[in-house]
Length: 370
Ligand SMILES: *Cc1c(COP(=O)(O)O)cnc(C)c1O
Image 1 (cartoon, rainbow, N blue to C red):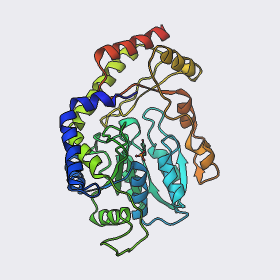
Image 2 (image 1 turned 30 degrees about the vertical axis):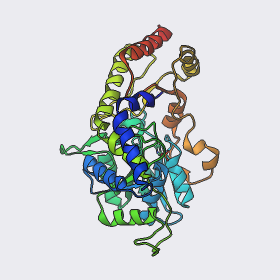
Image 3 (image 1 turned 45 degrees about the vertical axis):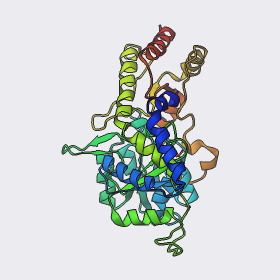
Image 4 (image 1 turned 90 degrees about the vertical axis):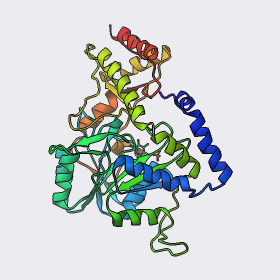
């Protein structure tokens, strides 16, 4: 599904030097590379503050803690997403309200957000799934009108751009209270272990998030709130500083591979290729097709026999997971989420896909459906 080895080999001297510098300095925690990476990412995203942390799940937790939500407050999330989004809501004693997604984009649906809002709603967490932004303009219009906070989970969409109808563009995760992301190795900007970050343009929220991530201390041995311990290692920051320089090239490589897949699969009636929204670029964290539910398992097995990996992201709606049953509520019948769980299949997608590899994958797919 990914090829991290060849990606590393291409920038090996720079990465190895950066790592060796960390070891030589022994500043393993809060070394200068951590602040330097936060600044570099803030510049890249054109956002005021970036706060690094230990992983993308912590990033969501820190952002939610910084918003001072109270147990029982309702948080609207898509039912079709990675578990982390809802997990943190549950851990903080908040009430998840799991709603259906748009069947084309697989992203949270504005009309359903509107339907889900009650007087208890305090937060909406759109997830920019697979690398494409949710309908932020529509969502922000709603949340602004109701005075509801927004955290964008951009773990799969770092580098994607969103364009509003007035023509202004911004990077994913920079238009709401917080954006959060993950630097898990297979994410679009991945380190060599775990890592995450929070972004915001609000200086008060930035300071709060930084304090929460650091044991709730505004200064050493002064604890204003109960916080957590969530840090990005200096080694990971040094690697990310180097890899950030290549993020746009990485995104383009993914888009090129996606274009190749699109062209090959468009004529195949049984395959629905990824929908491309007009107001967002797509950075293809995943290349996810939809195929008829009754043939998916057979098709997946066929690919596997031909040496082609594929994955189902995600097989079970959040609200049907044992841990989340009876927690919070759902809105509507979640029919699109259910259907997507039965029909999605993600194909190999990474920065190192060669034309011969793409040709092999696409011709194998074509031969199955011919
Ligand atoms: C990967 C991911 C996360 C969690 O990131 P970790 O660094 O693994 O904690 C959260 N949300 C989404 C949508 C993700 O894809």
